[in-house]
Image (cartoon, rainbow, N blue to C red; front, side):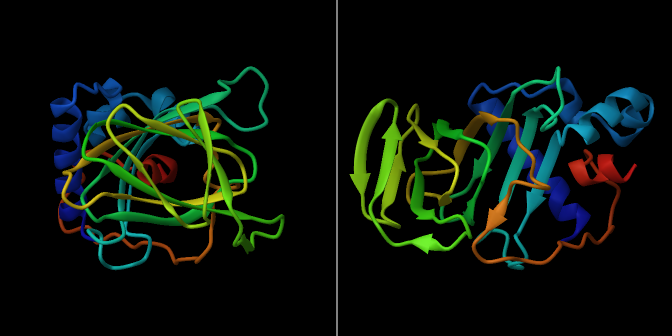
Length: 223
């Protein structure tokens, strides 16, 4: 993925944030030079896996399978005295999806803060991560119900779905409804040890065709 493309996605995402009244942490739009001037903040965000994540999940087609995500707050798993929660802001375009994945440790709420509707498909997995093609119990804003495995749950603006551990989910912007501003509120997020995909994908390479507008989390961690 070209850095120029990543920069444009960041511009689009910050415009979406503004359109829906979401104000990210000030460091989200810091220049590389501002990060270089605050080594302590850079270390904190890198260690806490906080910052921008933009990926195409190895698909090579970002607008079909891709994600713009900002981890705004997070703790460090297993470390005393840390935040016990995480907060993310996600921008999903119509038809763009994040593929099936699950977590073993954290419970999370997915919520639509504004814009288009979000489709979420669900299937439980066993302890080995194998899908269980059986009915799935869901919790949408306190209302419990049971649906078929991989059946789509549609969340409109203001609605949220609770996702427990071992419940694999894929989510996508529902076609015809516009770009969605999605929030995630969860227990501490650790993508390095608690993010399992039903179909693994390779690393995303970045072509440095222009300087970074804002730094990705991977840039912070590499520094």
